[in-house]
Image (cartoon, rainbow, N blue to C red; front, top):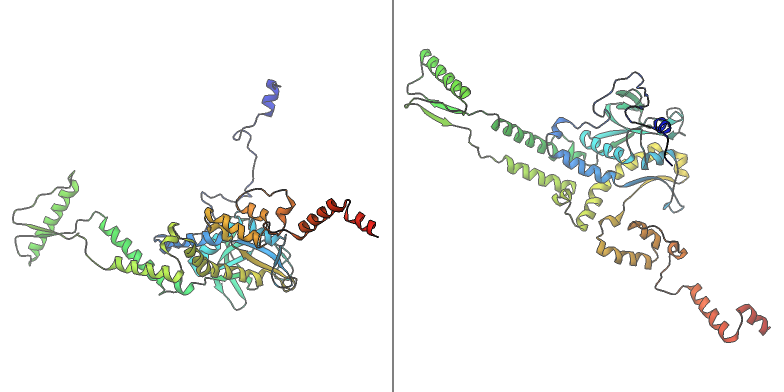
Length: 419
């Protein structure tokens, strides 16, 4: 049924005309996101940021959850808690859980050590050991003290970064496991950054527009008068080149000009290639990993040698800082899980699924979720059973039906007849 003109005008909505009035609490706004990580200038001007970003994305892709263990310290179930919400869904009002962990890793690589600060809590962490964490932020460590640290954290209430001093048992202090390779003053990464900065400086000089000419005049320059004449001649050639449309100047037939801006051979590029290869080997990465052409074995080695130490340093720090002694005695833990089926090609997935279901490791519905299919309604799809073998209940049912056909009646009726 068509709406009348009055109803259409009454129910009309426009994003620009029907704006909801908002309040910024009197604080100024920003053109760019103020809580975004800022990489130091030395790293921004080099290829190192690309390596940082690749590692951070891979670490953030791993699932980290608040879990409960069984009596044998094995994973039992997920715990529906505020901390688990921070780890799997939303870490604060600006960052999702994945963006938060990417921020943690990027800051840790850039600074060497980073702080994970519980900003919003239910209960005061400095007065009690029993409190709930509602939001987490990444902080930069400004000063170290025997029992406290001063961290610079973004305050989402004021929109400013503020320095606060907190006890060490409240703040998660995550140190880069590759500190000696990345952050030491004379480490391989720092040496590579210096060489890359030198190469950038040479490129800027070569592209600055300078001609680097030497003019040989037809007279000896020893007296002050001759020097003044040479200086006038140099300025005259500069003015000719500057005022010429195509950069053309004239000289005397007796003058000789030598150009010096030809590329000078040095071993700087070889040193950069050698340091890059050394850095890749010490971090456990290859060029194939960065461009996405690595095979399954290479990726497995990468996850076990590079990603796992980073994840363990983050998770271990959160375990003993954000879980109380009582919680750990109740078998609470923080674990990370990696999906091993992401690296398996589709042509091998059918073979793997057959082995896992046949050996009663995973159910059919669990594998259907891996390939993106909805669960089956068949009850057998949620059972750990080998479909290629006859189950005991099936054998019992088959025998009962055979006996029923031979003697007539059910098993109970046959027993009653025999009695």
